[in-house]
Every structure is written in structure tokens, then in C-alpha cells.
Image (tube, rainbow, N blue to C red):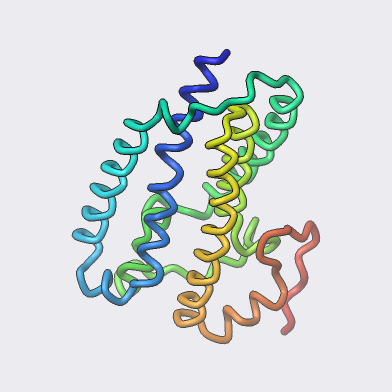
Length: 200
């Protein structure tokens, strides 16, 4: 079990930071990346992400030097988080195509126009993709039970919040009053199980 926990923790550490630093780079400098074009932008970011993942993996042993052992209670807590995350992921997959996940609507909005997502899971929560990512990270952190995975989880909370603020500013630029009205009726992170009706 220790070997499984170790390699899952290593996978978590080497995959999560590159994935979210991608968006932390895209949104604040969106005008620059749009001018550069999606092809070069994605190539630069993918190369940087793989390089960063490789660097983190290379430091796996010292990064994972502090562990707290296999804990059945924490594993039990991780399982429902994984289940909720899987449900969110399934609902997201109905509305988010691969091109959307890679940022094409942000990088080339004139060629990849999509409407503001307000249906399905987006009628209950504005950022289900980030909530899903946080839940799955928390689940793996609990399962692995290494100090580094908990530090990663806490760091991810701050990073995701900053990404959300930047992304919402960009969405307001794209959708204007429509996005303001959407924000007024749908919460950021805690879902409403009964979506509010749109005012006519």
C-alpha cells in the first residue's frame, strides 16, 4: 500500500501544479496570448507543463520524505470525495468539449464562440470544474497521506480562488450584463440544488 500511495502522491504533485499554472498564465495575459495565437500559445504551455512535471517528478523522493502512513479513516473519507468528483466530472463532460477545456474560446473567441454556460450543472454552481478538481485533489491527498500532498491541497485552494477572480473578470469582458445577471443568481462554489428561475 505504501508504494501505491507514494506513486499516486508523485503523480498528484507532478500533474496538478502544471495544469493550474497553465490557467494562471493564460487568464492574466489573455490579450498577449490572443495576439500570439492559440497554436503557439498551447505549444508553449504544453512544453512548459511537461518540463515542470518532469522536474517535480525528479524531486519526488525529497518532496515525499514526510509521510503519515496508511490511514483507513482517511481512505474512507477520500472515497466519497472521489465519488462526488466523478459525478461532477460526468455532468461537466456533457457541456465541456475538449476545445473548451484547452482554452480555445478564451484564446480565439472569434473562431470558437460559445454561449455563456448557464444550464445543467452551471445552473447550480459557476465553477464546477474547479470544485471538481479541488475535490479529487483532496481525495488523493487524504488517500496518499503525505505532507507534500496536503501542502499542495492548501496551495491549490488559494491558486484556484485567484484563477476564479481573474477568469470572472475576463468573462465579464466577454458577456457583460449577461454574466452579471448570472452571477447574481448562481453561487461560485457551493451548489444550489434548486436553481433560481430566470427573471423575464
